[in-house]
Amino acid sequence: MIEIEGVRKSFGKLEVLKGIDLAVDKGEVISIIGASGSGKSTMLYCINALEPIDSGRIVVDGVDVHAGDTDVNKLRRNIGMVFQQWNSFPHLTTLENVALAPRIVLGKSRQESTEIARKQLDHVGLADKFDVYPSRMSGGQQQRLAIARALAMEPSYMLFDEVTSALDPELVGEVLDTLRLLSEEGMTMLVVTHEIGFARDVSDRVAYFHEGVIEELGPPAQVIENSTSEQTRRFLANVR
Amino acid sequence: MDSVSVFTDFQFSDLGFLAEAAGRTLLISVLAISIGTVLGCVFGWVLSATRLAGDATLGVILDIFRSVPLIIQLILFYNFFPIIGFNVSPFVAGTIVLIFYTSALVAAVARGGIDAVSINLRRASRSLGMTYWQDLRYVVWPVGLRAVLPSWAGVALGVLKDSALVSVLGYVELLRASQILITRTQEPFLILTVVGAFYFALSFPISRITARLERRWQYD
Image 1 (cartoon, one colour):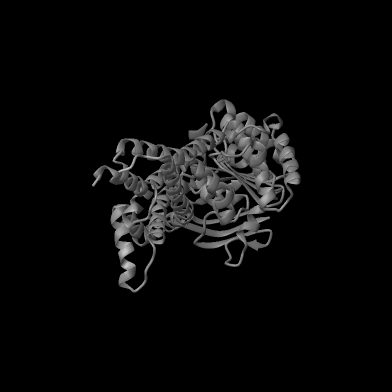
Image 2 (cartoon, one colour):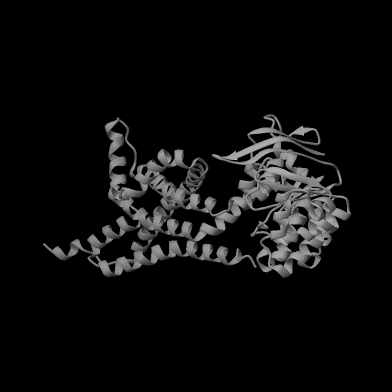
């Protein structure tokens, strides 16, 4: 499980996280919604130590992420992350994109890692794209490639940072379908998203971020449908 | 006295003399380009990784190598050793200067290559559990290399031609050899044409190989 306790974080004078507490159980899907600049993405970056924190604690499966003696490279194997920009490795085919990390990070053989890559690409519906370079694929396909690449490490957790925000509208669906598939398979997921419909349908809980704090946290029926918070209601009225 | 006998025509054996000199140009260029490129990549990485601190220290030194005309560097360096009691051959002095000159040029190219790889791409590779060095080796290097290969080829071709300046130290490479032959035969047009052809023959592989690599590295 992921335990976030009193996390604070500033960029220079700007405090973006002002004391975040959140516990994510195994198998849970939590959607994080909120305005741009409310700290949602920064929170995700702190969970796998891509960003340091100023105070508080983040513990993943008993390991203190930001403790000095924590091997973050080892920790990150267990926490997959997919970004707004899909960040495909441009010099590698899709198969090589996915097979690279299992081979060099987990030390699997070339054959074994290729087998994993085939399986994961098939999983996200890219079985016909093995030998294609990312530049030849649509944004939606590249984003599914990024998901397959993260899944190839067989992580226990997946972090999604606005994975549909940079996509053309007609490509959003195929990526959200992939996320749905993962949630049905029981993957533990933290999903930063502006897709309120997705948050309502798929998540177990929804966290509304407002100016660096979690303003509201609860099941979608509560946060999205019957919010008691003025801030949340105003935000939802604007995005719908 | 027959004054005409001082000059003799260009002979077939002179080609052998030029070929030997071309070999020396090749040797000094290959040494400078290969060692200079390795050093330049290290310097470029330091500049990219240390930013301001690197600019203020290593960056200044490299700027000196890049800014002072190579011929001045060669003469200063070559004459510096006797002052402190050592004698070095023109070849050694020329090679060392050319290596550092190349490394200074390559450092700027290498830094550009590293900076051409977006921070987002590097975060993606780190998020997969890659170490800093794995990211550098498997992502930054291949992606950055593709971005700056044409610039590197420009540096390499430039160094090959600039190696002619080592002739001022008395090292008999192609240009020096051509001057010797011109003095003897009084046929500058013919000899410079032949020497130009030699330089072309030496440069051609570099431009061909890099052009071929560029084509192969098209991402589709």
